[in-house]
Amino acid sequence: MKSLSLLAAPVLLALALAPGAQAAEYAVDAEHTYVFFEVLHQGTSTVRGRFDTIDGAIHFDPQAKTGTVSMQIDMASISTGSTGFDKHLGDADFFNTAQYPQSRFESTGLLFDGDKVKAVQGELTLLGQTRPVTLDAIRFNCYHNKRIDKEVCGGDFQTVLERDQWGMTFGLPGIPNQVRIVIEVEAVRR
Image (tube, rainbow, N blue to C red; front, side, top):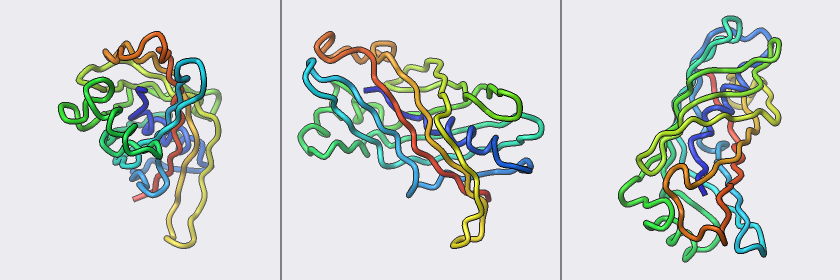
């Protein structure tokens, strides 16, 4: 269940594809950004949850094909629909939110296919350990939001993490090591 800061990467991907976009700063829209995770539970069903509180900033220059992403996730904002399960995921067996209240994603590079960003590479810090992560673009879009009169870019991104790389070994092998992460993100141009 190591999802996380992967969110930042998706925003970059979306921004990269904005037609005619110029270098700009974007703020993650907390009301339209979530990190979802899913993992098989004891071979019976897929357990899903999300993190609801995310903050971040992105600088993106599509013409130079450069950018940076910095994102933070409040690990206590986990939500599975079950208060008891959320509490267990927050304890030392999994996310240990008392000792590690935040997760971070910092980009290290963008991968392009022509003019389009196809992945964001970065480093995810979770449970006090930092490991490389690549986020792949599923979709993205940029548009002018008439309600706020600003450019908004966003999309869906995904990766698969192996939770033991961050020291999360509780329940192995009944709870598999691989966790699918899907990031739904929107960012508003500053």
